[in-house]
Length: 252
Image 1 (cartoon, helix red, strand yellow):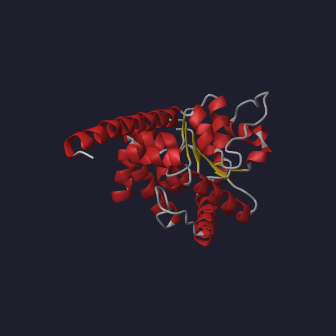
Image 2 (cartoon, rainbow, N blue to C red; image 1 turned 90 degrees about the horizontal axis):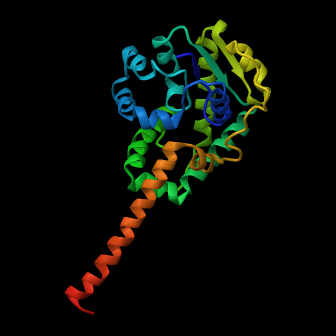
């Protein structure tokens, strides 16, 4: 383990993930956390976890970021005391909460994704862990299935403010970088001790394009969408078989 990104989602974390990947780091973002460690995270939510558990989870990972890991940055740091910490921020709190609300609405209103979360093995496993994460991170079970979209922006801002203050106060000052993604490669690479790449800094999840980006690039999301399409096909076949059978057995 080399870096904990303790910044909240929608503070440029997807762009930073792409930057780390380009630099050759093994990154566990929220998709990797849920897919590979959903069982461990359910245990952490139930019991609080342990230093040994976090050490087993991330011993072969370079960077951990986004939910649910960002909320447990201090416990992960105890397991890996030599790692560096990056706090991604946005200067305007109101802009951050509006951006997060748009993303949550976009995710919640995506019918294919909602179907996948409900009817696929990968989706059901992820949904349980994500709902637990929302309760811990936001203080409420944010909508994540067929329910109407509801976001308490006041709660979100309070949680964001409290979390950033905690990181600024308690992260080791000599190992902490407060980072705005618009600053680009220079402060990040200087902090990591690597050379600046000769390419523009990545810009991901633009205008809540997370699901679209993942559907095109992320193997775990691609797998879940494939499972959803197979489930839809099976449902269609089942209906095609049951309707004629009904009329044969019961008549018109």
